[in-house]
Image 1 (cartoon, helix red, strand yellow):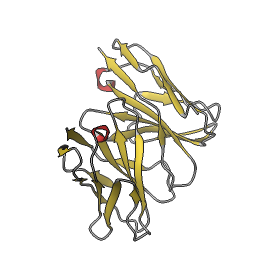
Image 2 (image 1 turned 45 degrees about the horizontal axis):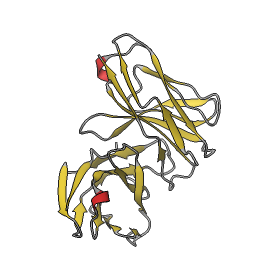
Image 3 (image 1 turned 30 degrees about the horizontal axis):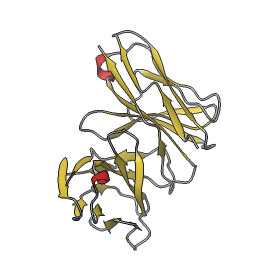
Image 4 (image 1 turned 180 degrees about the vertical axis):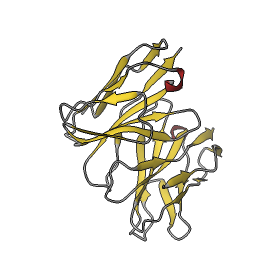
Length: 115
Length: 113
């Protein structure tokens, strides 16, 4: 079974600085999809960024980028120029190929942004 | 554009009571899901549906039931509430293709006392 591990229960960053959240996963598949979701205090789960395993190029969305290391099964999220609104729980998720029901989530990392 | 709407947002149940968590989406997604989120844990899949009339169990289905009579609605039923069902419940929906994300509702915080 695929598992997703987020080894940092909590992280903090100073406003305007950069922080990296870690995620590792276990799979025997060669093609799959990875996601980072943000969950602010409102509880709404919001997609931050997605990566397709067959694409070598790391995904980027404005201040958010990933470091996808397929061989190491690592998928870290880098937040640049951190803003107070980035404070939230961040979940890493893995979706199996050809199987929409199989999305596995990590336990989450709580990010605090200090002014 | 409402997206995925869940009701209620909060609920307290007594042990043995029943309730239905409502979920509706207006994006014409065929795939819908119910997850639960326990403290310090990621989301775990309870049930999912790939279209009207089709449902299947996820990772943690015991104590729950679902139905899917329309594309829009996917209610989750708790028949005999137990303290172990205290959790935050999320409904989500997505297109069929695997490379698209799931869209989530705002969650229901359920406490069983």
